[in-house]
Length: 397
Image 1 (cartoon, one colour):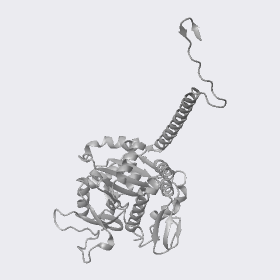
Image 2: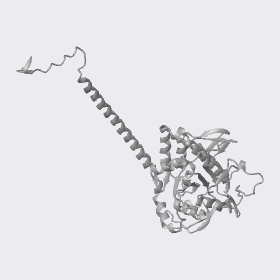
Image 3: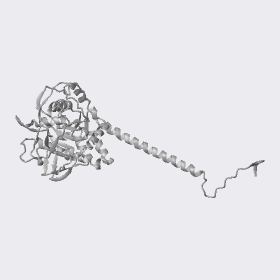
Image 4: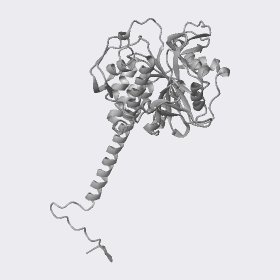
């Protein structure tokens, strides 16, 4: 049969059997399924990106920026130590004893002033080789420069205990005092109050400590049995603040206890159980970003992440804690003064980004050199050694 004369007709397509799919229908269904799968994946990716961006913005917005201190320090730029020539960084960590703010009034009446309860100079060596945290006693007698007060008036330069600097002129006054004392340029600073500290400890599910004797300290709101135990927010704060009820009651021993606790905290945060677990990591980041007030150079989540990444790259046995060489002030046993030349040796090593070694009190040589701070040197080119500890040591060792 033909369509017209001389032209054979096209053969008719074979009829589909009953119940069999059309040969052209199957590819159409497959393309339809692929389009919907791609669309679904796109929605999931966009949703995840949106949630990730929301979390990032929330954490970033948590951080409080201290522009006042930056502006005040800029006025005194000519008198400040020069910036370092390496990638090493010096960060001043200040624990404020303010009673103002939510959750802080229980520690005493708010007098409208605050002093630095704890101050630590953290030196991050170039190349992420080490981190050295030096505690500066709050009762250390130092020269505090003339500082601008909150009401715009100025204080006079005076020789007084170190933690008055924070009361006189806040963070800027404290930084200038430290720089004059050490000749070390402070690159960044962080301030944390009682409430922020508690939240940080709670975010990592507590920190383990060991007590030789039970503690009952009404002032520090602390009551603990003897032995190994995990401390959470309120207990942890009492542990690092307690003074008269633990040990010999000295501020030096309190700083040693703070260093032990911070070492254990660093160990806990560096553990894979926190850093590699988003469910645990987010509460830590949320608590950390809410807890701090920092300079404009560290006031973003990216800046803090870079800092945390640098810290994580440092082995825990290279994260060191010590107290600046000190002894009782000759005119007042309730105050401290630097031990020289040990303190100057320490400041020079940090300033020049040279190694500092710390050894536990228990490992000091018998019949050593008799220096009250436990420093030892064996020659002009030897690396100074100080009594201290590192984050790899367990708090119960």
